[in-house]
Each structure stands twice: as C-alpha cells, then as structure tokens.
Length: 186
Image 1 (spheres, rainbow, N blue to C red):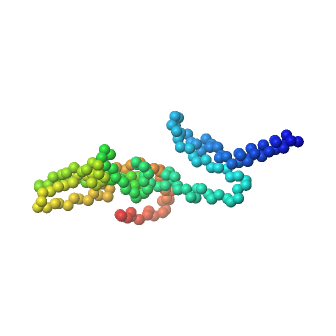
Image 2: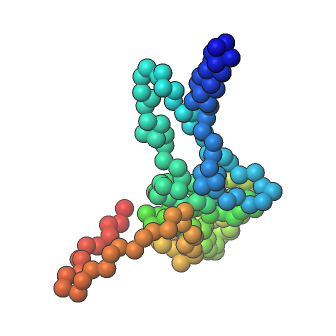
Image 3: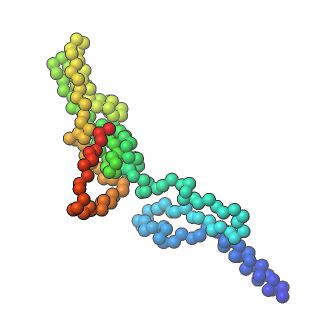
C-alpha cells in the first residue's frame, strides 16, 4: 500500500511539473535556418497550469506586428511608408524615401553649376543630405542664380526592392468603367 501511495505522489508531481514547463518548439516554429548559423528562436509560450486562477491576456494583442507584416521598405533597416533617411560619406550623398508601394526611391544631390564669379565647393562627406551635396560659392556682389529644385521623381531616382511583395488587385471585368482618379501630389 505504501508503494502505491509513493507511485501516486510521484505521478502527480511529474504531471504538475510537465504542465508548468514551456511547450517544446516544433520544426515548423523553428524554421529552416542555414546550417552553422544560429537563427533566432521563437519565444516559447508557457503552458498554463490547470490551477490558474485568472486567464492570461492574449500576448498577440499587445505585441507589435513583426516587420514582415508592416508595410514599408527594408534598406539599411526597416522604414515605414513615408519615412525619409539619408546617407553620406562612403555610402554616397543620397536621400531615400519609402513609397506606399514598398519601394524606396533615392534622390541624389542636385547638379550645381558655377556661373562667372562663382565656384563649386564640394559638400562635407561627413555630413548628412543635403549638407554633403556640392554647393555654389560666389564672390561678393555677384548675383547668385537660384538652384533649381529637384523634381519629385528625379531622373536619377532608382527604385529599390520592397520588404513585402504586393498582391495584384483582382482584375476588373470589361463591363466596369476605368477609374478616373488621379494621384494627389503632396
């Protein structure tokens, strides 16, 4: 009888301990990952014990969406749609903007001309855009012509790959009239 009580106590202790351990990660949760390279592991969720007094709040509701689910651009880090960032130095002097399509457009420095009495001074390679761009310096008394503003989509703008692949809109039937909306320029 004593052996049965000990076995019952051990079985209950084992069942209680296994209910409080985190659930193991399955191969689907771990992902493929390259050989020899440590890949980040998903967070293990603890299995709630049957004795839990209050239900836990859903963790997914409080956690921010992963980068793969947010629209944006991934170039030198993640950038939300509408964000602008700059490069300088060895990376060149460029301004990037993340477009709604998930493509980052780049804007190079405007071309600077040196009319008579003026010279072109190289930009500071350690400064950010636009201070890293070349600038015009003119002698005192020489009228300074205005620098043309770059076009919104400059000819040097290069579309870069997006973080997310966008899905094509469902094709419309031939009986529907085409949309006559025009994009707004902001």
